[in-house]
Length: 207
Image (cartoon, rainbow, N blue to C red; front, top):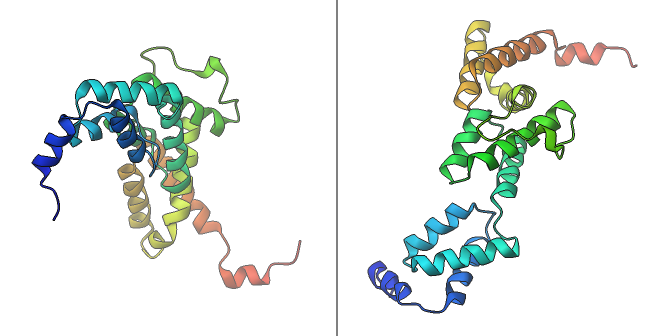
């Protein structure tokens, strides 16, 4: 029979050994990297004492298992590979996970540097306190990737205006700003209109 939640929480609240809390935190990190605040929230929800939770977080940070700056970079890179998002959505996601603004902007600055062909490790590209990272090149590239992945479904719409409107709406939902969404959807539609059809491509001469 499963232990009732109230009893589990009471049992955990009575724990005195910091190693038990550290083990629980490490288990939570096994599935994927987490922000410090995610781990804190999970342990506190489970019922562990606040002082033991903070001690576990400090130890995991010292060991390198918790690193919000690294977590933010990994999150942004993962999103760009699997589910491209605009900078607005990326900021919101990381903020909800409790990542500090400086770490968020550092990750976004590295993303922009890569898209622009710069060195992401260049300290001159790190935004000053209170400043936001640029996102023009990185958002444009991410929007193009998203349209390349989802464009086949949009192409089934025969009306060109509706097709462009749907492309724009998809980008807007993914957190891209109006300018990026408009330019990317227009460029995608133009490329789709000028691309040779399959039967035409078969007739092209060999290079």
